[in-house]
Length: 315
Image (cartoon, rainbow, N blue to C red; front, top):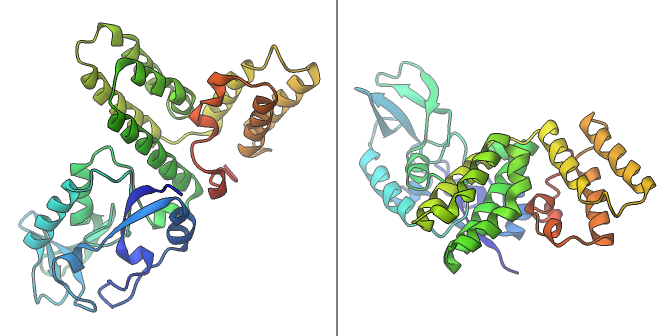
């Protein structure tokens, strides 16, 4: 089975690399996502020669600069950690996403504790040094923390972005042409619409002018920036309802009056919070099998990630 390459903090896979010699195994990452992701584990602190167990490091603000120091003051690994992080981040262009360990001074994506120079308290305002280098070197890469993946909305959004970004990487590997770019967007139109109406219009206009463009690669670069930005925005019940009603329109000439009413009622019950998203989606998929439509069959919105992950349950 083919798996998507994804980076991950090594401790989340059960590797005993933490400062106390332990790990932070995530069963969701290891078992559920691991069925579809080929992980590339990294522990920046072990990579620069710190053993396990070891003195814990923490971020300290000195003279306006963030340092990575041992909590007992016995060593400073700022330069080593930054050098490794920047080099490693540049080498990760083959992955389609990254899962970071929350709160870590090296891997924390946000709200990492930053201490004062004289041990005067801390503020949750930092970013781990490796996480910072990773996101700066790969600004389009889907990145999330293990703790935030407990939120079903954030979880589904992250995995969706990983699959979309991987799809884009495959397109780039085959070679981007104007026609290939248009075909790609035609598959993603309703997924984008479910996340951001404004970006839906912007991307449509961008490709609408593709025939006048002298540099297709430049258009493609702008397109993927817009797409990944759009998918980062959370879809909601209102935006999903809008898309479902668009999809409903493709069946108006083939459904019986009873089927039309059933689909309309199902979408409305989703809109009002009675049904989860999976109910109208399942019905639309059923009608799509009964009344095939090649254009709808290619819509990523209907299958943005494997059903076995059950990510749309409860949305």
